[in-house]
Image 1 (spheres, rainbow, N blue to C red):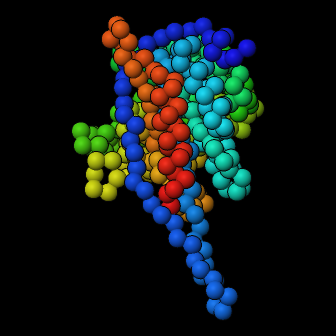
Image 2: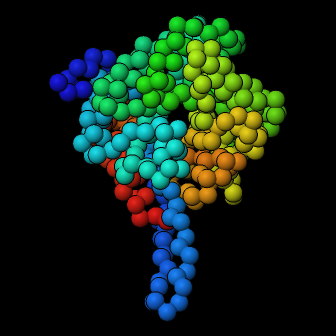
Image 3: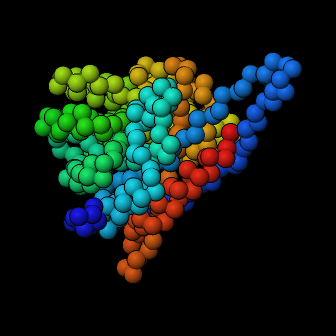
Length: 315
C-alpha cells in the first residue's frame, strides 16, 4: 500500500512564494605535468541540500504522501541539519540529501491547535523511511500573552520523535519577526530581546529533553517569517544580534528562506565558531476552483530536483 493510498487528512494553504535561482560558479583543478610538485588542490565547496519549508496546512493527504513518493523515486535521502552536518564532517554525506522542515509546532499546553496534524505528517514521513526537522515555538503568544505552561505529555512524545531521528529545532520563543522594513535588524530589538528569543528557547528545549534522560543538543535555529537575514542589504548577513545570541548556544545552522542555497566553503562547516546560513523553498502552490492556494506535489518535486541538479555544477 502506498503512502498516498493511506492518507486521510485535507487542509488549505495561505501563501504562494517563488523559488529563487542562484548564479553559477566553476571549480578549477590544478594540473600536474610530473616535473613539478602538484599545486595544492582547493577543497570543493559543500553543496547545500535541497530544503523544503512546510507548515501544518501542507499536511494534506493529496499532497505530502504523493510528494514523498516522488522524492523516494528520485533517489533522495532525507536528512536533518544535525545528521547532515555530522555526515559532512565525517566525509560520508549521502549523494542526494534532502531536508524537510516543518514550522510552528508548539508544546505549550494552551497552544498549537494543529498538533495532531503535525503528528500525521510525522507518521507519513516515517512510513516513507524518511525524517524531518520540526521548528518548535517554545512560548507562543496568544493575544498578548506568552503560553509558558508546557504540556509534559507532548514533551514525552518529542523525546520519542528525537530518538527516532527527527530533529527538534528552535523556532524561537515567541515567533517574532526580526526584520525591519528593509530586511535589516529591527531598531527596537536589544541584546536581551535576542537572548529571550533564541537562548531561552534552546535552553528550554534542551532542559525538557534532559529531564527525560535525553542529552539533546539544539543545533538549528529556524527563523520566523524568514526574517533575521539582511538579504536586501549590500552585504547580506545574519543579523549581528542573532549571531551573538547563537554564540551563547550550541546552534550551528540558521535557517531562513531567501538566499542560502548555493555551496558554502568547507571551512564554514569545520570552524566551530562560524554559523551556517541556509535557505529553503516553500511548496509550489496552485489556485483551485474556489480560489484557494493548494500545494502541488509534482511541481514541488521539480523545484527540488532543480536545486540538487544546479548545485552539482557550482563551486
